[in-house]
Length: 97
Image 1 (cartoon, rainbow, N blue to C red):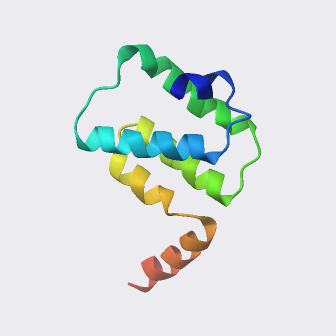
Image 2 (image 1 turned 45 degrees about the vertical axis):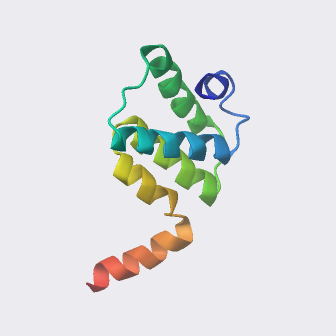
């Protein structure tokens, strides 16, 4: 999946990033290493997504994938839920506490 995404990141929809982010977050929780032959493709696939148009769902998936790729699995899981609408509610909660 990572290799497919790295070859054509502009045509991938958010599910590619969402799946990759979830797998990566779980991988970090279980402390499993990324195979060396996938590391370069993973980073290339994530960076290639920056050139396409994003909606709120794609934004959450892509940001989650970036967090997961940088070894922040707990942030990756959280960001998957952080759509623009949820972000507004979160900020209201955050500033009211």
